[in-house]
Image (cartoon, rainbow over all chains, first blue to last red):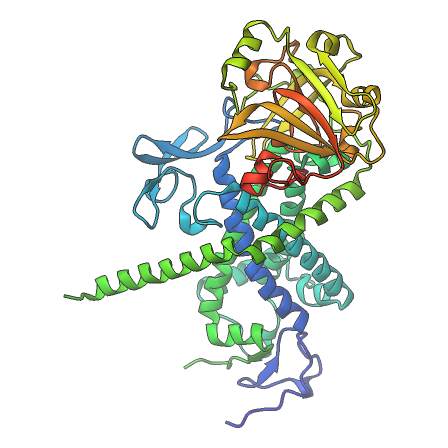
Length: 290
Length: 251
């Protein structure tokens, strides 16, 4: 098969005129440069934020609801060591986590009693100060890049054209059909693969427009200076400790998104998917797979 | 004998080790650290832009008080000097205000408690992540500074404390924007009682828009300076000097 030309194929939005529709097997333009740059910047930034955030959590591995919360107050989540066991306490439930959380061995084989283990944190050995350096530098990267992406994607109508659900897509029957297709690993072929399906749209929209602003605002609510300037944040989230809990839950949401995202990349064809996010070009999958 | 499982395990351990030492090298690199630290100035400017110099930290009601106000850092300063002050109820404790001031001051606790006072119920935020709400009573720092008469070249206040922390004298510093903030007080009371030893008796700083480590305890001397260089290791405080904590602790 000869290498097809990609010159006539429009970027990202599926072509509407049938005479320009690309054939299965063709290499077509898929992701804009702005999307690709933002994706890889985020891929790095998110990991730095998550891992430095876990180290910051290690400084006080307890979560509370309300305005205040310290050791004498009731925590809804707590990670610690009890004797020679690591324990995660969630409400009234105690879950043993020895070796993973609360009590684990560092690379030198020494037993450490910290919440998250060395391989999950930045830096790998306990330092709240260093974790804060990483977290608050890359927080700026995340916020500036995120706001820039919001602006660019709204102006070039990427959001409106590619991410917002179309008429009928939010119908329960359509969503249920898409869930069944995902469960059977039946992925769209041909030009349909150029369009996000409804589950993808909902996942991307909720990360970009719910999780991202929520994690930034709850992060800001933990700042005593920002609270003084914007006291409405405290009312919105119900206090600094509630904001800290929501911040942690949002981080957990990001971890879930990344896991599902990576799984889908692997299932949908990692070479083609990763290439499309690096070079922008994507080979249209065939209508039938042998 | 090399088994497949053993080989995979040692390869994984090796890769982990290489990754780990690589990450540790990056974290320790002075260039990387100074790049990361450059965000502190940006954060401080951004926070000073969104809130002007008089925006107040939220004040709570007595119903919001933490049942237990946690004590952290130094809970009991070492040494016979502090102990004898404690035993005499800090009757001979003196606060000195000097440095770049027109009229250096030396004040007893009785004199400080007789000055106009401000009481505020505020949230104390530790850098570690916990918070406690307490009711603080003390003299607005502005009144002391007006009494001493700051010279025009004064830019920072250094708080010299009676405690040593890990073999270094504890000290902290703030700039004049925070020094003259209406909620910045030298507190001598917590929750309607004289300040307990664990919370900084007899006198501690409240600088409500910053994190806990800026709220110096056991204050003996306030020095007005034009630069932080030449005090401690020059970064403006114990945690800043020895642990690379941010000097501006607004988040």
